[in-house]
Length: 244
Ligand code: IPE
Ligand code: IPE
Ligand code: MG
Image (cartoon, rainbow, N blue to C red):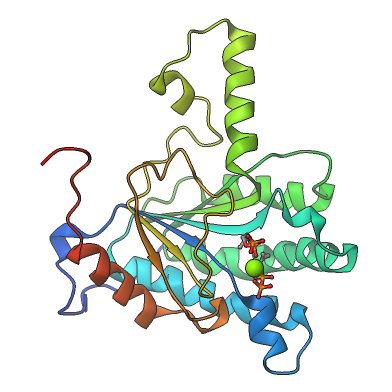
């Protein structure tokens, strides 16, 4: 059994009020291809460079005391990409899990997946996903939820189908309870990198009252500094939830 060490404690930067840290931060990890193209590299090298950004972002979340982090790794629309890039991403995500899961687990990170677990995902990757979820199920410092073959519309369709099959009356609670991860809290802070200002089918239901922050940096250039800045921006917002 790996020895559990706690996340690097304390040094929450002065700009952050530790009593008002968002519970759930969601991240669209976008801009890998452009990051690579601007460096005359192939697109896939941009995905590879994004791995460090993910690790740094998780470390920043641990440092700030964020409890849930959901990252968009592969959308239901990303199947439209050339088969070579899709294949690369399947392999890359499998290798990334194998490379990183022990160190993440040692930091107390529980890893979960949200998305449609269908035949399009290679069997080997599905097996790694299930293994990783089991391996880290007992961790409770941070939940890293990886959105893979994820699309909000598919998720809502699947939830409505489940309601129908069970003959349950639709309600907000009944729908929430049938999403891919019913224990996922609502998103407080929703971040997208790469300067694009769109949602791209990511956590529509869960982000009904999220604060949106759009960052110009490409994903491989995202890290602790940008995460702290996004949380500081979140803390400057006035959340009203329809009230006054
Ligand atoms: C995000 O980077 C990663 C995935 C969608 C898997 P992109 O691959 O979308 O990079 P850009 O947006 O083309 O630069
Ligand atoms: C969203 O990025 C999906 C992920 C980051 C995994 P895309 O690059 O696929 O989104 P669009 O196509 O620009 O909307
Ligand atoms: Mg993109």
